[in-house]
Image 1 (cartoon, rainbow, N blue to C red):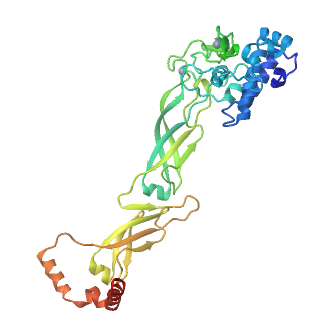
Image 2 (cartoon, rainbow, N blue to C red):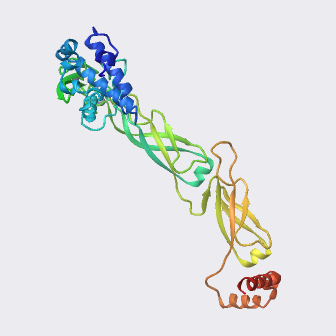
Amino acid sequence: MKKEYYEVLGVGRTATKDEIKKAYRKLALQFHPDKNPDNKDAEDHFKDVNEAYEVLSNDDKRRRYDQFGHAGVGSSAASGGGQPGGGADLNDIFSAFNDMFSGRNRGGGGSPFGFEDAFGGGGGRRRASAGIPGTDLKIRLKLTLEEIAKGVEKTLKIKRQVTCKECNGSGSKSGATENCQTCHGSGEVRQVSKTMFGQFVNVAACPTCGGEGRLIKDRCTSCYGEGIKIGEVTVKVAVPSGVENGNYLTLRGQGNAGPRGGAAGDLIVVIEEIPHELFSRNGDDVIYNLAVSFPDLVLGTKVDVPTLDGAVKLTIPPSTQPETMLRIQGHGIGHLRGSSRGDQYVKVNVFVPKELSHQDKELLKEMKKSSGISPSAHNDKNAKGFFEKARDIFS
Ligand SMILES: [Zn+2]
Ligand SMILES: [Zn+2]
């Protein structure tokens, strides 16, 4: 059975047009598919609500419906049976809905308004008395590893929309406004259009005043009446230590100023780490590759090693093996939470020269004569063990 239209909207049979409209707005918003993704029940409800409103908001149809029921109002409405609005294209409903609620769309581009904005003030008609909200602004901030290690305060010069100083953001030189003649101050215009259901009343934001209901007199020549203009501002950002690529900081109200007195958007600062030429990062630790000569590895030595805080003396103990990681405590990156820092790891490797003087070559040949520097002198047993094992496997 098809549902009773007054029941669908939850109003009495004597409801006024305004009551019907209010009920419709509330329900359409509640069951709008954008708010109920993949919810078939909500979608059906949304269709029912639209169908009911389409009939009850039209004097002629409402009269016929009151008199004859569903049979009195159009074929698509009457033929529904178990599938209400079966012939209706959901997209048509959406476009009608969008016209009604997001009509502020002046240039045909994306409307910056959510439904909450369109409904703001409990159905109040002059919707934008507080101006239009400014948009968020996103910028990238490149930081060195040194800056990330200890945290840094940066002063940024950014271009953004700022409140026009000439008119204090009002858009008018003298601050004067006048009632919009197109919509007579209501901010809305009504258009009757034909849809699958028959006639449909679209209530859209007035194209002349953009829904504000008022027009600026004495338009400010500096901002062309927008109340905002592009300007350059300096913003201070305190970046804590330990941030990583892709982390972002949100600075409330530091984004673009809103046209004609609207609240400013946010400034979103996205962190980008500049790769360091000496260090690589592993969480809050840094890794440094150090090449040491063979004699130094064997005999041990002290070397100056760069850190994020300047050079530090590092002891290479005797008989240090290649690939050994030596730790310099507390010279890593400051933890995002807490005051301590990570460590620096020094990965020690053998330096193998590519070019040698005649004298160096002679010295190395001399060194080779010593049996003590060859692995066989130290690993004889292991080596034999290995060859014996290999024989076992392959024989
Ligand atoms: Zn208007
Ligand atoms: Zn201005």
